[in-house]
Image (cartoon, rainbow, N blue to C red; front, side, top):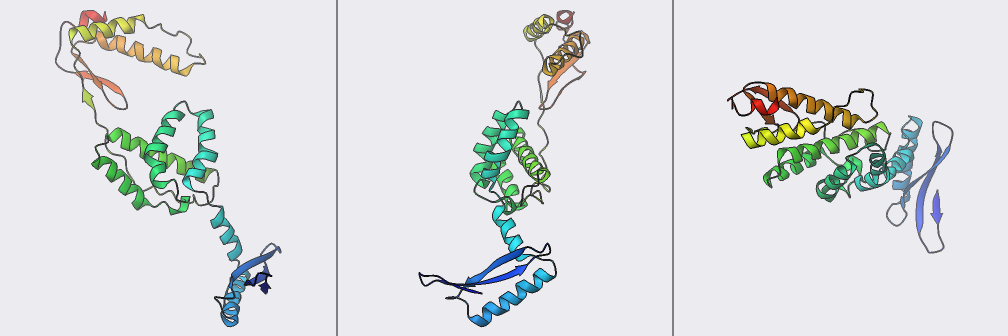
Amino acid sequence: MLEVRRTGGKTFYLRYRDAHGRERQFKIGSAHVLTISQARRKARAVLAEAILGHDRQRQREELRSIPTLAEFIDESYMPCAKNVKRSWQTDDTILRIHILRKFGALHLDEISNQAIADLLSRMRDQGYASGTVNRMLILLRFVFNLARKWGIPGSAENPTAGSKTAPDVCRERFLAPFAGHRTAVAVAAFPVVADSRTRRPARRAAARSAAFVRELLREPGCVVICGVRSARAHAGTYDPALRPLGE
């Protein structure tokens, strides 16, 4: 089919029916660029694919419906994160500073694993801590997993699948007598939640942490190791001034 407009424009189209019997119209191209023979060959190829179940017009519509990363974040992810995540402001900061500046204008299917690897390498070269780099990668992975779960076009493949987080950096801190005293006073002042069924999980978790530190301070030769993910204790150099403070 050739469409001729009043302005003088001419465009070749193909009309056909898809597997569901619906009429489709596929734009072949401008008559100023294609000859009639070229348009016919293109129309036959598209019609043959439609008969075999490959709907070219549907594929074109799906490609056009793929959102950019910035559109998905603004329209889908952030509204959901604000309702279900306490740390949504942290997500917003990481997205604005590290992710959207690089990938915001790209469609979801245009973000490659190599591009993410380059971003991780550049952040490490710029001196960002491993925890910051890991959080950025984990957030981006979560965003793509959520998009795939919701059936967003262009999210069939997660480009972060081949990227690994860097090892956490743990730092040891040996409590001096004055620091041990402050820790013991702060922990002793924290109320213990007796009801484990309280509806405030953060309060319940803080009470468990306080109880753990109380027991920790009673252990001889304990050393508190403050890590990125957790705090643990092991036998180390014993400071006799610390034990009475926890009792």
